[in-house]
Every structure is written in C-alpha cells, then in structure tokens.
Image (cartoon, rainbow, N blue to C red; front, side, top):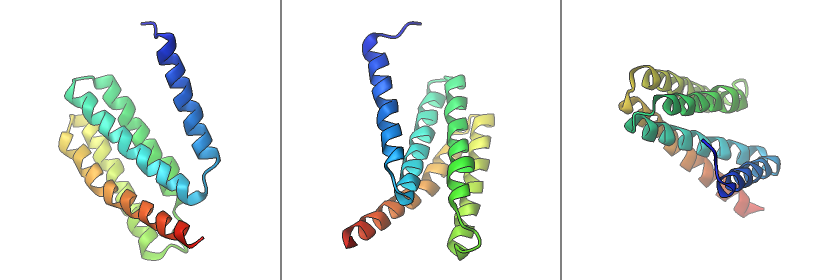
Length: 136
C-alpha cells in the first residue's frame, strides 16, 4: 500500500522529465511524444490484460483513447491536410473503436490491431523529424 522513497522519487523524476520534454518540444516533437506514449499505454494495457489486472487494463486503454481523442485528432488540420489528414483521422477513429472493443471484451487482437496501425505512423513521423532536423 505504501511506496518506498525510491519509487516516489523515480515517479517524480519521470513526471518532471515528461513535463520538461513536452514544454520544450516543437509541434512535430509533441506529436512524436504522443504517438510514443500511445504505444506505451497500449502495450501496458496488453500486459495488464494478460495478467488479469482488469482495472489497470481499463486505465491504460482510457489513457490511450484520450491521447487519440484529445491529442492526436485535434492536431490534424482537416482543411489544409488533404487526404493525409483525412486518412489519419479515420485511422485514429478506428483505433479508438478497437481500443473500446479491447476494453469491453478483453480482446488482445484488438490491442494488436492498434499497435499494427500506429507503429508505422510513429516510425514515419520520427523519420520525417530526422530528415527535417538534418536540413537545419
């Protein structure tokens, strides 16, 4: 029930580190951080599901849905982004649906689908950042 000083210190360090990364990030980096965190939450939910930790599974799936609905989807410019923004919006919507199904039915395949969809987007986004960063 109680956490050790070391665990509390580590948790505080992680919070400060994450807050610093976000506060110093440009818009491209923020999307990269969101995609990374989304994958982390889905993978953590997958582990909780395998261990039968239903509350933890639901908590991590909820965080993943919030990242999609409150972070990634609003970042899309559907007016100027053309087909790419529209396609990403559709993929994010699909991921929210699959996460909801995973939570409701303890469906490991649904979590796997989300990872299968998001990983290539995250990798491509990182490569774009590396290419743009190399030009400056």
